[in-house]
Image 1 (cartoon, helix red, strand yellow):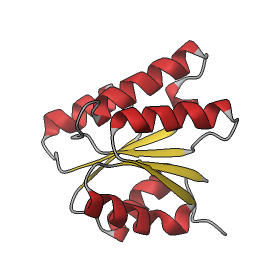
Image 2 (cartoon, rainbow, N blue to C red; image 1 turned 90 degrees about the horizontal axis):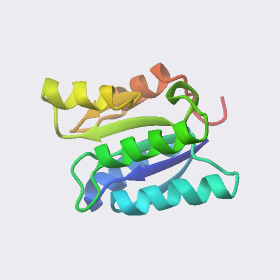
Image 3 (cartoon, helix red, strand yellow; image 1 turned 45 degrees about the horizontal axis):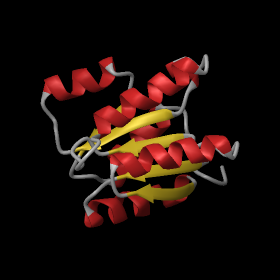
Length: 134
């Protein structure tokens, strides 16, 4: 499975990428604009990502904006959110309003920082993913 991590903080990005290694091929973007470009580029090459992990608080285009834009692209292509790329928000924002808004914008999962393997693995399993090689 191809995974894209969009995270502007270097340490958080490296940790998340390390935790995702056993799940598939992990790529990264340092902001929302780059993430959207990589999402579009992978689709053009017919090598789409199966999972996007988006930080909400990024400079420029934040994770919520990326989420909404991706769902708009999929809708325009006739792909429902349930059949589109799985999008997991990975953020320090744990207030109910932030979580509820992300799900209204059609994210598939929400994980709060600080990250740990158990929390991440549980969410990925809930989304229907299996570790690579299983």
